[in-house]
Image 1 (cartoon, one colour):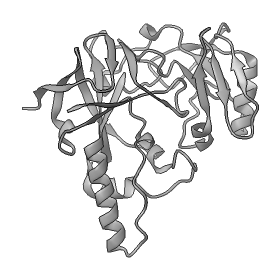
Image 2 (cartoon, one colour):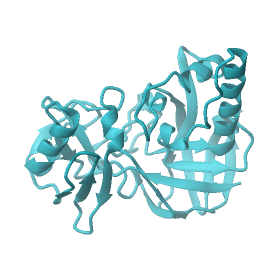
Image 3 (tube, rainbow, N blue to C red):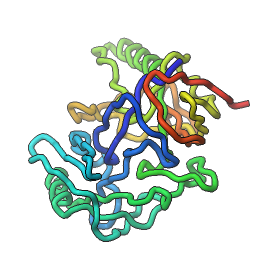
Image 4 (cartoon, rainbow, N blue to C red):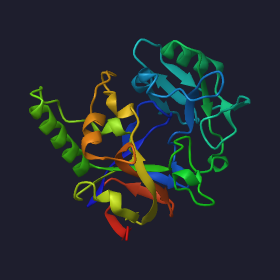
Length: 276
């Protein structure tokens, strides 16, 4: 029962990095989703309407900027954000800092529509809403819904089995197993029974404790293949059959850290409290 993977996403909605260790801060992993791409009105450009965001590789630089890469576009080194505060409207947040104008032009070319890259200068300005399980004092990065999303390898294997069973029932070709990257987790655990994570209320990873804030309902993002960018029916079709209640489909659990420090792949995961 261990932490099997750590994923960090420098820019909200773009591809992520699998890392061996990371630092847990009150608002999430250090370097996770401090940047986001918005339109001219400050609303988020998200994957469901802009799947090309998944083709972007964003590498943090030592100076605090980004190195941006995507098929068909020139590589761009973005300096640390020092622009004006720009109104944003997709979180419990009023403004974010504009990046260099070349970054706006780069994302505008990528998406084929006006875009701006913004940076969250101080995550303590962004509170975690009570509607997402936030308590007084809880803060979050541009991830928005929670500092951490946790998924389980065994739950994904069960989901793949269900998808296979459904394909055979419909006499369709059995698809390849799903990539966990579709679900955009921060933390992936292994060694537990499928979907037991739904019952966790508090866990410890290594020496750090985490409080469950809510289960994760799934939007259309997991239906996009992170490599081909093609949209399909899975996994939402199968989740709707096996994991649907309250009018939503569910996969993964959101957590808020109670302690701060470093975590590493291979750290033991201990369940401290479950639902009554």
